Amino acid sequence: MQKSQEWFPRVNDTPEQGRRMKLSIIEPCGFTRLGIFSYLVENNNLDIIDTVNISQALNSLTEFQPDVILVNMTQHCHNAELSLELKAFFEFRHTARIYCYIDANYPDSDAPIAITREVFVLNKQSLTQLLQDIAADPESFMPENNFGIPRTLFSDQEILVMGYWMSEMPNYRIARKLNISSRTVYVHKRHLAQKIKVRNRLEFCFIYNLIKYLFWPIDDISATPISRQIKDDLLMIYKAHS
Image (cartoon, rainbow, N blue to C red; front, top):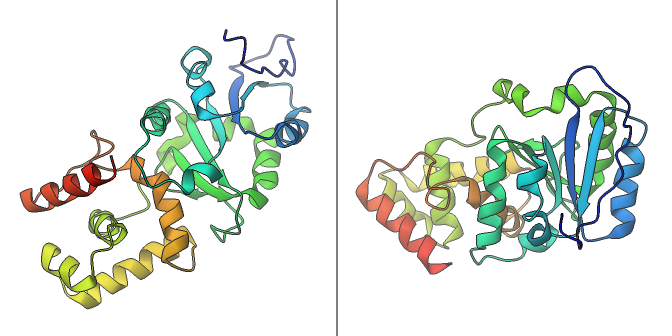
C-alpha cells in the first residue's frame, strides 16, 4: 500500500456470514473523517479505508475495490476545467456506488439525489442521515441493488439542453439547434434545476462541474446524440474546457 495512504482499522475482524461491505472515504478534513467513522463504528460488517483526496484515492481504489465511496466534492465543484483525475475517478461507478457530498446548502434535499444508478449528490448536512442508514442496513447500499434506480435522472433532451446551457448559449440558439421552441428550452432548464434541487444557474453550474463526467462526450460509453451537428457542438464545448 502507499505509505501516504491513511487506513482506518477494520471495524471487526471476526468471521461473518455473507460479504462485508467495503467503504472508501475521501475527505480532506481529518476531523470530518473521524466523524464519519464514528457513525459507522458500531456496525461489525464494514471494512473502511480513508484518503485525503481523489489523487491519493486513485492509488488504492483499484486494489481495495469498494462497494460504496463517500467523497467530498466541494473543491471540484468550483473548477470548470476538465480534470483527468475526476474522469478516472468516476470510472469506479461501474463497480461501486459513489456519494458526492458538497459543503453547501444545496442540493436542497434531505436525501441523496440519484444522478445515475451509481452516482448520488447531496449536501454535507444530509451526510449524517446517510451514514446512519448505511450503518443500519449496509446490504441495501450494495451496488448489486442499483437495478431499482432509474438509469439517469435526466431525459436525453434535457442532457443536450444542459450542455448548451452550461456553455452560455442563449435560449433561441438552443431552440434552433434542437428544433424546439424557446419556451421548451426554458421548461427544460426549469426541470433541470428542480431535479437537482438548486435555485439558480450558479448553483446548477457547481453541480454540473461534477455530473458532466457522467454523460457523453466526457463519458464516451454513454449514449451519444443522434444528430451529427449536435455531436460536433458538444465535442466543441468539451474541447473548449479541456
